Amino acid sequence: MTTLDKLIAHFERFPGIGARQAKRFAFHLLRQDASHIAELSALIADLPAVMTECESCARYFARNGHGTLCTICAAANRDRSQLLVVEQDSDIQPVERSGYEGLYFVLGGTVPLLHQEEGRKVRGPRLKELVTSRLSEGLSEIILGFAVNPDGENTARYVETLLAPVLSGSSAKISHLGRGLSTGSELEYADPETIKSALKNRD
Ligand SMILES: [Zn+2]
Image 1: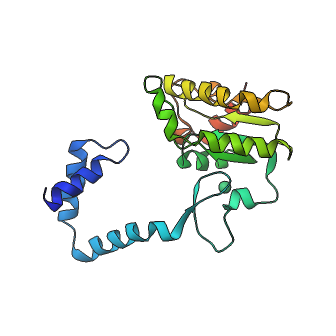
Image 2 (image 1 turned 135 degrees about the vertical axis):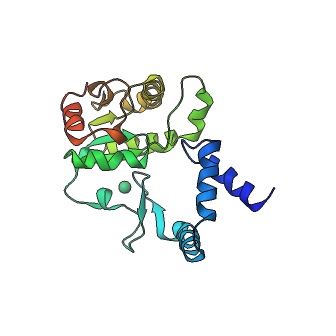
């Protein structure tokens, strides 16, 4: 395998990137000057050192010397009674723009209807642990913010089953944001007004 082939193979592993696009990326790089390529390589190489996963919500944030919590989880003015579970890091920014004031948890993927074993790849056990410890700190609602499609709905069922033993006997409940979004829509691409109304109409 040549260096170029290896690079193409790496790009093919990127989310949503097929063989053709992977090739286009690689050939695009070939046409760049050496300084651009050096800068890009350095940025990629620096990532593990400059970014870290929040100990609470599991999203990535830039290390800031202030410990293991991201700015949202560390903020004193967030509403700790609500926990919004999202699929990925990129779902958080649009929700923040909608004015949501609760906390988050990034599940790290979906549990596809036809590939239930994928459930092993998401942060289910960590979510269960977080909810268990937060119940004694006033957590009263877990809002599931997955896409309105079969995989999103299956992921919601997975989380409901996972949390059922933890929530039984507690007054905390699970609600769904997805049903307030239109069918097929994903948080990542939703506008703040749509998210605001989905939050208001959660069920
Ligand atoms: Zn956090």
